[in-house]
Image (cartoon, rainbow, N blue to C red; front, side, top):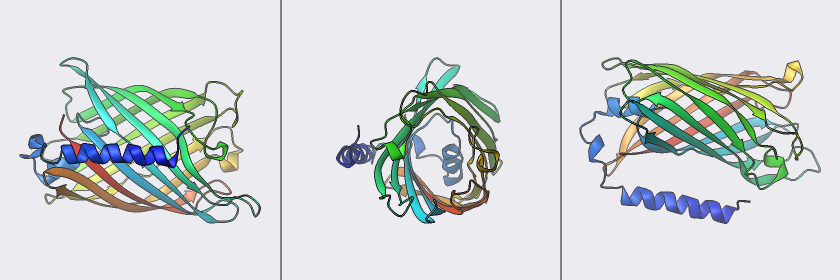
Length: 275
């Protein structure tokens, strides 16, 4: 369905968007680096952004190889009226899958796409929330990289972000059920919980921890949960007038399926655009 060439064209389009917006960020000009960092840490903020998050998973699979997943995650807010916004979040996966058995070749390509639309107050207080549907679309170009069935479920996010406080903390959660079991990959029922906590310095530097806890409710009990611990550091810098949120961290899986990765290196670059 997708190819490496189409992915390159998509990246080129995103790069062109960056170039055209290079000198078009006056809305951020008066914000401090700390304020920009806190805006970037709000999953339902009134901000157009394009995060590129790369996850490298070590000792993955029966052969204990390295798996790499690039998440391209455009976030686009849509104003409903003066009281409500809908924040759309799309996650497209670009996967490099290692050999899973001696006679099984590695795979590279596009995985399934996750789309979430959060309804959120346009003028929240220090506590911010969003709720809405999450959809899983079978966009993979190889049966080893996704599931052929569509999925849907609820998603919810809540966080605390207070002016004058260096702390931003909260949690995002969802659960996705397969809408059928008739296509390749079979039925699925997967949950996700991502608590996050950030401490921001005035320079735009911040400390962060945002482990992604997942559960496969259909797996045997010993293989259901992946529970990482860890954290990292982030920094706001500018590309001309365009703010960029950069981040790197490491997470160790204290609980994982039999062939799950031992640990993960996560690096992210988030391009931030004014509406």
